[in-house]
Amino acid sequence: MQKEYKTVLNFASVEYEEKKSRFIASVMPVSREEEALDFINGLRSRYWDATHNVFAYYIGGNSVTQRFSDDGEPSGTAGMPVLEVIKRMGLQDLAVVVTRYFGGTLLGAAGLIRAYSKSASLGVEAACIIKRRLCTEIGIMVEYNFFGKLQNFLMSREYTIKSVIYGQDVEIIVFVPVDDAEAFSEQVVETTNARALIDQGEKTYVTLDQNGKILL
Image (cartoon, one colour):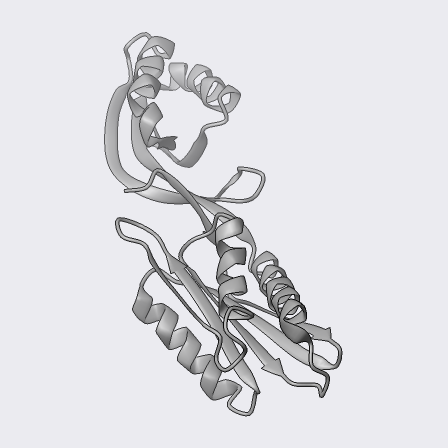
């Protein structure tokens, strides 16, 4: 499993005009090729009267899947520039479709590359770039008289607390990057004078915004 990667948070659609040609960039996060193809085919149906429905998608993981189509535009002027935007921004697990309604003025090869690249970039930015980080959910059970000290430790290191459950003792669930899990557990033992019960749970991807803040 990848420890961290960048993708987009949600669907977005942005319009851009170049010499009276109308470009509509539609972006969607996807995790499988089937999802990408369903998204592309849905937009082809929606914009059935468009001059071109250019697409590109890039899916990472154990084996990378990447595809693109110029959909009738001159070879190398549409689909590849869209794919290059995805790769240049270091993104994966997304599909981008740029729909064009021809405005009557030829853009030339260089103009097409610029227009498709700009449309794709605007669409990706609108879809909100995020990071996905592989973390271990670590549960900590501690007596109340150690809770304040432990809470201060977590806040000073900017660990993200998933939940706090108040019972006979306090149970805290914390997201910890997988590479830090062992060192984190040792620090908790030291902070609580070995009075905490620590349970390393499942590994899960958490979502971070562009400032590195986890989105719960």
